[in-house]
Image 1: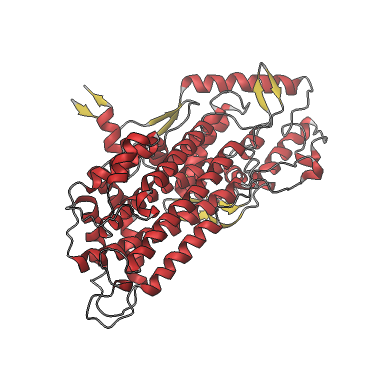
Image 2: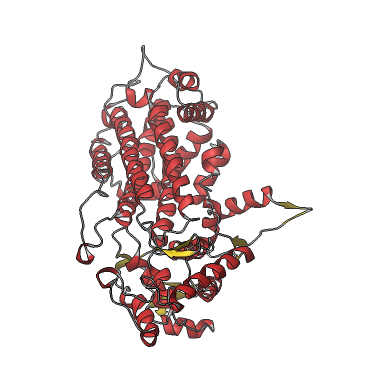
Length: 527
């Protein structure tokens, strides 16, 4: 018996988070299924038939946007299709990571393999050669209103033709230089290939998948620090037990995790009748959060296996389509952003309780008895700022009005902007978890508690970077170091291995790439 680590065959079916983690890391070979390539060929024949009889095909033999009524002669098509991708290389700002761009390219291949696009098989081959050579276009992230990523995908399409910038073997260089170094040739854009290379939302879907997976990991850590804070505050575990019987399935899942993760700790209880809501309702808050993230994740994955092109090839002919509006994914991500604000408020409230001297005779600002210090009072204001920051990025933006292209294009989802704000929320949540962990570690040391298992893991991380607080000192670098380690794939892997939430952890492929691959090989045993 041996374990094999398989490559990934793209077939037009939706991708998984585990597959995207491996593709994004650039450590897996990709291929296109024979059946998918057959579908590509059949759809291409329909497009070529339409062109041959003089039927206008949007973005292939006609202009785009406000120039839709301009028809190009056969002699003009090569110049038009080459210029089309290059005209849409207009993104600016900080580039997306190579991880996101690799996945965007794979998504574009995969949705074309549905046989509903009409591009040439040669375009698929060109994308595949670039991915397998790990020649990755530089894609600057500002350039899409969320109705096809034309300014983002256009940067990939332009590189295919030999212009723009790319990363090859870790070095950023001009596209022509990268092609020469990789031994590849730029491609000529046939009619339909140009628009197929730029008028889809593949970059946004790849970025949304990455952000949602990151959110799942951040929520796992924040849930763990919330459990530790609850122990430090002597909260009753009865609400966690009760929710397993009276809550929703997601709330019951969180309640069970909280009970299991705290079982090894000699849990201190000082509750009189009942606790503050931020302790009593952790399962309700985080249950709603994980339910939303799972729904959002499923919606994103579905988008990786369907054509969002315009036009499309269906029912044996080329049809115009409105599929380039990713409103379903956008609205769910906006609701996820609201969920993050609820999680942040929940954690901030516990930080306030840890420092206010109202539970278990903890001293105000967690200043040890007999010490002359201001303590943690000032840094709790940082927790409040972080909560406000997360909340400020939870308001929806997708319904804003925007009309371009001489009034023809009057819908937009602003998905890239929604993703960018969501990513910034995740950065803030990771810092909030570090603060809650730091305050909780100070509390348990003052009280002489001995947290174990999950809480013990968090305590060890805190004390690795921050000593017990007895005199006032700068805390900025300590908080950042705790944040970095708690947010690492290695810590997430240990957390999952200690007390898993299997249906959540495995769906999002949380943890290190090594853990993801171990899970895959344990499920696919070759005898």
